[in-house]
Image (tube, rainbow, N blue to C red; front, top):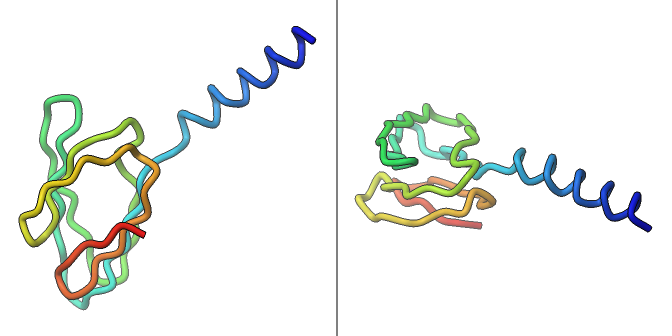
Length: 87
């Protein structure tokens, strides 16, 4: 029983570290997100059609329209018409 429990914990620990939010830019122009993570801010430019993964441990993100959102790192986001929507 202990072996099964240890194996389950190991799978969860490894699996938990690979999750990240993903975002796709469906607009025809570059859209930039501002990601605040661990006290630091970085800009994440997304070209037309580009997909990126970010925020593996939770973060705050400022969308292209200026809205601020807290993310856990498991979201799927789509940018269309300059607006980000969490799917």
